[in-house]
Length: 155
Image (tube, rainbow, N blue to C red; front, top):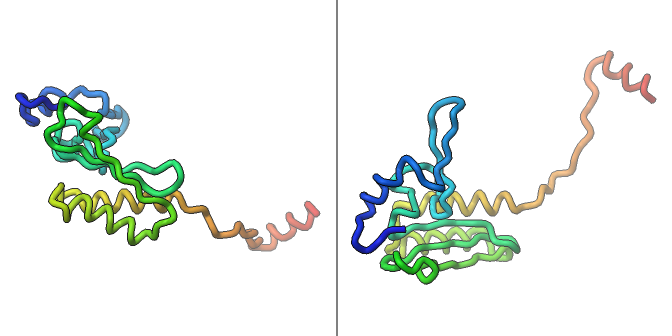
């Protein structure tokens, strides 16, 4: 969305109150969220707005398990498809290697060190959600005489 002759701050000021990623809720406190794919924390703020910043990081689940790290290249504002780099960490890779790769891609390569912790947390949450629940369902114990009598009456 950013153009070479328009600053990111100006774009943010113009689109801050109305954009397609903004989520407003009328009930409860007036908290605003963002659905921007390049927004790791889903917080509506200038720092985390991926459509405004030249460099942005997004993490999404992969179709076959694992995570996909999507980054924007600086200088490709007029070519959004060419400025999008996607790296996939499969579900067969260990969690530590995935987190280390995400951290290296965001911080150590000089990209956006301020987003390293948020990126690793997002990747961790996605990996955790992809795990199957391994705990078996157990039968609850009956407690109290009234519950035991009711169970006997059913049988």
